[in-house]
Length: 328
Ligand SMILES: NC(=O)c1ccc[n+]([C@@H]2O[C@H](COP(=O)([O-])OP(=O)(O)OC[C@H]3O[C@@H](n4cnc5c(N)ncnc54)[C@H](OP(=O)(O)O)[C@@H]3O)[C@@H](O)[C@H]2O)c1
Image (cartoon, rainbow, N blue to C red):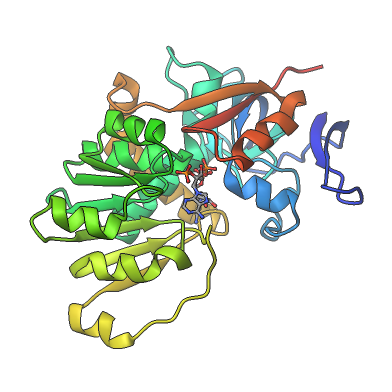
């Protein structure tokens, strides 16, 4: 098959569409012909050599895919060759084929394209696990979602809004801020112009927020802590501005705050299956009816992957950048 290979022996680690061995099909897995995959920030980090795949995972980039089942491994039932599916992957999505545990598969609704389906698994499952399983976000609560126009942010705003929460989002341009509002944010703040730690209490009569989904890290740490209501929780999913902070523990003790760190990729298959099932049972009907929608920023052919990566590196995307895979 063909796949994108990171040429790590060359300057800037260029990406090349090359012939590589087909994946092995294990028991309980299905082989999928991939027709679309999508970018995640982690792909840029892995390409740069800063985010190696977990043990046993493919070293091909790509944390999600959508395609058609091409073969069933031993012991797989309930699926047919030809079924349209998407799934979370620990790697291997930037390729013509991938092997996936059957229990991780999500059926693609009839009226969806492969491009829409590829935009779902990583960001919706990340948003879901961190808001509802890690932070135990409740409908009566207020949540602050940083990076509101990112892939994860666009999923998180929609899920929290649908759950009945009050949603605050931050983003770096007025266009992104307007999009966050369209997705359901009650308050969206352009962090380049306004300080969220001032705007939020001014908007909510002095109150703060109950949960923060944070990917920014160091730059926001102190302001995030100060903004939390009693018993507030922050889930850290990345450290885009840096990961070194200092903390007075009494701040946590006095206000009974919780700081939670979380990654999705390194979790076991069993955990990922639990997360996928919990997400589907709570929100899949809303996705099928279009109340919650995948947000596709742009679509590139897989051979244009360099342009796609550049768009993400320049922070230009609103939602997901998708790669269309045409088989040779
Ligand atoms: N822990 C996990 O399991 C997990 C899973 C998936 C993703 N993630 C993380 O979640 C984040 C979003 O992922 P994604 O793939 O959805 O990303 P994405 O679409 O590339 O969006 C990231 C956005 O973050 C904003 N940003 C970048 N640097 C910033 C900074 N220093 N301060 C404030 N905002 C900054 C930019 O938007 P603005 O123009 O608004 O600044 C950028 O577009 C990434 O950091 C990713 O690594 C973690």
